[in-house]
Image 1: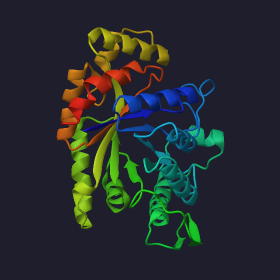
Image 2 (image 1 turned 180 degrees about the horizontal axis):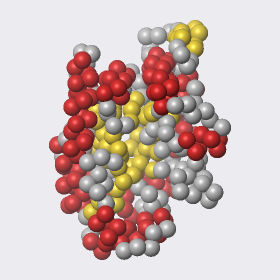
Image 3 (image 1 turned 180 degrees about the vertical axis):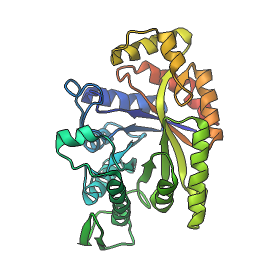
Length: 320
């Protein structure tokens, strides 16, 4: 089990915080740093801003040397697939081959209205995702010198997409969602990894089974499509430390309730507790087929929690 950090960049994360978080990930053994790709805060749109996801990752490439960098996930409504493929290749070179691309259909309608992005119905967005996946894949493909594509949503004519990615064959491409039948088929065709989010181990097991069946249906080796999980995480070195971190998180959310009750209300789809408890949860996910966990960290100033994870969780998790 590899451990990554996932940051909700739209919740007021400053550039200095990004550099500090990336540096902490490097120091404490995290496999990767992922960020959301949103333009509007969920709870504080008038107070909290966001830096652009791919501009942030390109800039962080020069501040890091080991960790991988990626999005969870970039919505198809924000960027034309040719531009998306190009900005990811740029980050691939800037990071010396450490970039990953998460893609999804998009869901947050208010930010689309605020920034003027069209927000078509879900069936249309899913169709856009299907076409974008093919276009991005083909533009990265070293065997395709010239790409022509004619679809419902996108048209390319004689596109020589150079340079090709630094990584061979290409940057890791991640799809996210619930691994239902249609998404599983799409992942089996185009993805290197499937990311489920905020679900307990038994749902990950079901997702793994659907993904494997979709791979087998097209003659793909199921183990070549990896499974990961993104979920909210809260870790304390002991019970007192855990409650202190719960208070910090509650204050950030404007919650003045009882931290013990807050912790008790966290469901089985959240990773929370002391290191021993967190390792038990990770073991259950590993048994369900999860190979990587993206720990969503909402208290962006709390670098000490990353140190606790690095010292007491990551070394043991590598053996799960």
